[in-house]
Structures are given as C-alpha cells and as structure tokens.
Amino acid sequence: MRRTGRGSSWGTGSDRDDTVTDILMSDRLVLRPASSPAQVACFARGFGWPMVDEIPRDRDEGVDGLTAWEAPAPLGSFFHCEDADFGIPYVAVSGTDRAAVDTVVAEARRVLDPWTLPELYAGADGAAEPRNAAETTVLIGLAAPNDFTPEVYDRISAAMRGGDENVRWAAVWATTYTGYDAFIPGLRRAAESDPVEWVRARALSVLGVFEDFRGEPPYTT
Image 1 (cartoon, rainbow, N blue to C red):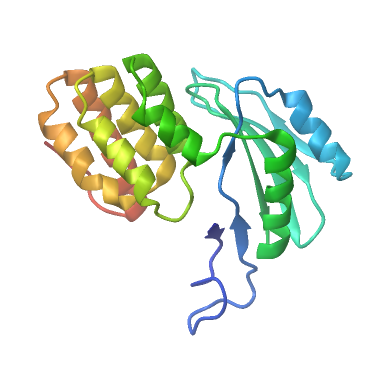
Image 2: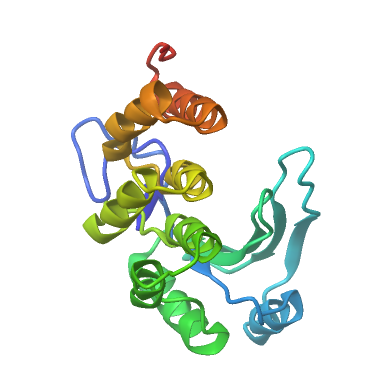
C-alpha cells in the first residue's frame, strides 16, 4: 500500500513533519469488462458516501475519468477511475488508517469482483495471440501492487523482450502504471535497440516520465 504525503515513512521518523497527516492509497482494483459505473456507485452509496467529484474521461487530452466519493475519517476518498488511454476501469480507496482502508478494499473485492493477479498471470502465461498478450500485460501493469512485486516485474519484462511489437509496446506502457524503478534498465534497452521505431520512441518517452519523477536529467539515446 502506497503512502502519500510529506512524512518520511509510515510510522515515525526523525525528519517527520508531525503537522502533516500521512495518506495511504490502496492498490488499484482493476474491474472486469462486465462491471459498470452504476455498480460502483451502488457500492459507494451502500456506505452512505456522498459523491464529491466527477471528471469525464478524455482520451485525446490524456485525462483519466474519475468519480470520487468522500468517506468519513479515518478514510479519505473512494475513487472509480477509467484509464485515459484504454478506458480500463479500476477503484481505489485512501485514508489515514491502514486497517480501515484494508476493510474497504476487502469489501470491494467481495462485491465488485475485480481481476486477481493470479488470474492475470495465468492469462499472460497462456496467451496464444499477441492481442491477448498485450491486453493482459496492460492489465497486469494497472493492477500492480504499490510495493514491488517480482511476478509483475517478470511478466512485463518478458513482454518487453517478446517477438511481437504490439506486445512490446504494451509492456513499455504497462511500466508506467507500476512506478517500479527496476524497469528502467529494460526501458533503456528498448529505447536504444528495439527493432521498431515507434516502440523505441515510446520507451524513450516513458523513461522521461520515470526520470522526471526521480528528478534526474532526461535520458537520450
């Protein structure tokens, strides 16, 4: 579970700013194609949470669709998002108490039945068609836990080295959802030596995202 905020760590730390409350953000729960915004809204209404924000998805502008409900403390917000590029829906919850966030996540898993990582791993391992492999790779990236997960890394890395350029492109894109710095060497290799120009270009642009986040100078080939 990822923590956002200005504190140095979850818990206490010598350089911690005690005037700022740490906010925990759950892992994303990626919803199946059969799910609907109405089901998610019904889930939120079941807790009595008021909707406080709604932003329509705009693929051309790269804007994720977002609906947010305000939950009482120690929770923060419950989110339903649609990825800007592919329209893949997912939900997440924030709060200041790990147990409270985990309780909502468990209920969302029970009611909304999102993809599980073992299902997605099996789909990637058994994909016979490049299109299926590409779609599953993107889903794995979006469903990647906030904490580094070797099974996620291994499958996306393997897809980046695959024989189909569409699968390699999807894998490069999938790294952006994870935030795992471990992908940087593979992205550099793709930017330098992938045989397809538009895959190299995408890898280079994704490297820029990672390096901007890390405060590093842009990578050039």
